[in-house]
Image (cartoon, rainbow, N blue to C red; front, side):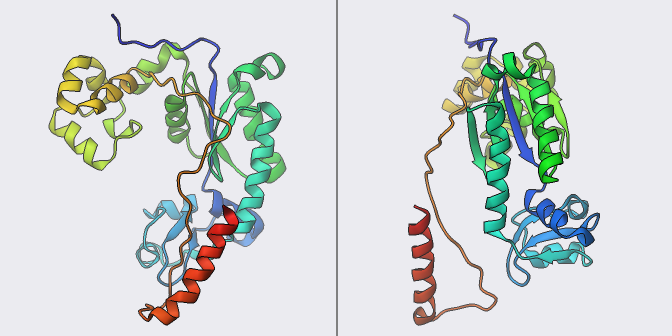
Length: 281
């Protein structure tokens, strides 16, 4: 019996990801920052929340310590994050998505999967729908985004990642194998640094090499991960777009400019954070 799991032809998935969302919002709202390296995050002991593409050229990326980011690019402008403002923009972004399909699965404030299979009769081909969404975001919100179009979520997300910034990449079902083949195994969904290192040691550097391996061999080498790798290397991802995703965790964090070690100092902070989490819940 073949291990292939062919997807129904009507599946048309669009993955939309805003380009450097927080930083782009700041550049839109402050024209003097356009074309300049912008880093959103805490100024002193914080970390980078987002970096404009001008800043990314210096190797700055999310979660990098701000001290290190400024060492790489001293002229960068550091902007404190405006969470409520970004959430308001996110609501407008998702309102644009909802015009084209009710099947929208948000992954974060600035990223979502859309199943546009039921929208083709009204709006035209999936690639045209994706282009219309990107155009609406640019014209109405002055924000840039990238989109990938494919027959499954995994390939659609890969496509949007590879065409950033302000790109649109369509991967027809018949071309998925050729699209995936040259990519490094680290590009596969669920393959982190540890799993990638295991794959490299086993002689798998590209998706093509994984796809050429027998499923039984991969399962023998990597257990349950082997079946997962076999499916993804062949572009098999039957996950549907789920409009409402249940949050698995919720939290609140704060970086202090100066270390706090006394419990009396920390209690009010913990209470405030607990109230914020309770309010969001």
